[in-house]
Figure 1 (cartoon, rainbow, N blue to C red):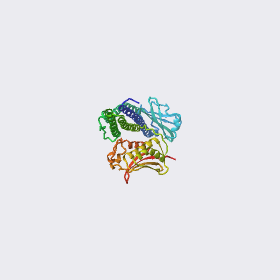
Figure 2: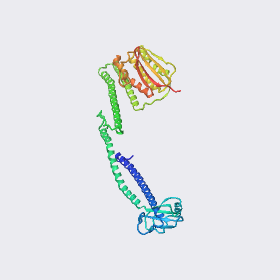
Figure 3: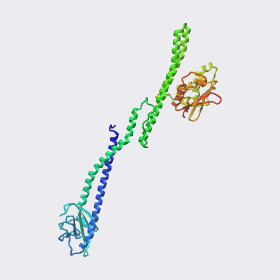
Length: 459
C-alpha cells in the first residue's frame, strides 16, 4: 500500500488526467487546423486555376513571359501547361520543362481534377501542393497545373506547435496546483474529523466528529462514523453496567459467605453449629458457582464463541427430560409439572443448551410463580414453540419489555427475592444462538407464559 499522502495522490491523478486531456486536445487541434489550412489551400488553387483559364484560352499569352504574372507570384506559386501526353507546352520561370506530374498523375488529370503534393521544384526548394485539371485551348484538350508553396501552412502549424508546447505545460502546472489545492480543501474536513477523533476517548462520552453539511461522501462518512461512535458508546455503557451489576451480584453471596464463616469462627461451640454454618456457606458457594457459570456463558456468547452441537431433537422428549430434573422440587412445594407434547414436533438444536434454557424457565416458575407448571409445545412447518407457564401473580406490564435484559428482576412485584437476574437473559441468548427468539406474556387467568421459538427440523 502506498504511503504517499492522499492529497498528493489525488493531485497526481488529476495531473495525469489533465495531461491526457491536454495532449488529446492539442493533437486534435493540430490535425484539425492542418486539415483546414490544406482545404483553404485547395480552394485557393481552384480559384487560381479558374482565373488562369483566360490565359490558357488566349494563344497570344504565355505563362513564361517576363515580369510578374497577375496570378502567379515568383517563389510562391507556379503554373504549367501540358499536352495530353505530359509534354510541357508552357510554364512559369524557372520551372521550365521540369515535369511536375508523373505519368500516372498525367493520366488521372486527363479525366478530372487531382490534387497532390511535391517535395521540391526548381526555384521553389520547399514543399508545395498543386492542382492538375483538364482545359481546352483552340479545341485541343490540355492539362493545366497550378501550384503553390505549403510554407504558409507549415509556418502556421509550426507556430501552433510552439504555442501548444509552451501553453500546454503551463496549463498542466496550473491545473495540477489547482487539483492540489482542491484536494486540500476537500480533505480539510477529513483532517478536522481526524483531530477530533484523536481526542475522543472513553473518558469523554458524548463527543462526536464535526460533520460538514456538504451533501457528499465526506458528510456521509462523518455521519457513519458518528453512528459508529454512538454504538460503541452504548456498548461501553452496557459493558460498564454489566460489570457493575456482576460485581453487585457477586458481592452479596461473598458478603454472606464471609459473615457465616466469621460467625462460625466466633460463636460456634459444637460440631452441630459448625455443620450448620458450613451448610449455609455451601448454599452461597453454589450460588457463586452458578453466577460464575452464567457470566462465563454470557461472555462466550458476546464474543461469538458459544459452541453448539446441533442434532435432531424431539420436543416432547426434550420437555420430559428437563421436567424430570425438577420433579422433586415441585413435589416439595406441593406443586405439579404437567407435560403436554402437543403432537409430534421435531427440531434441530443443542440438547444441553436447550435443556439449560428450559431449566431456567422452570426454575423461575418454581421460585416466583404459583400453582402447577405447564410445559407444552406447538409447531408449524418452519418453527417449534416450547412453552413454560405457571399460575402465579405474573409480571408488571411495564416489566415485560425488559424481562430478558441482564440483571433485571421483578422480585418486588412478585413478593419474592433471590436470583441473579440472568436466567431469562440466558434463555434469550440460547434461543438466538439457535436462530430463534424468546417471548413472554401475562396469561389472562393469571400467571405468565414464557416460550422460545426455534427452527423446526427439515425433511
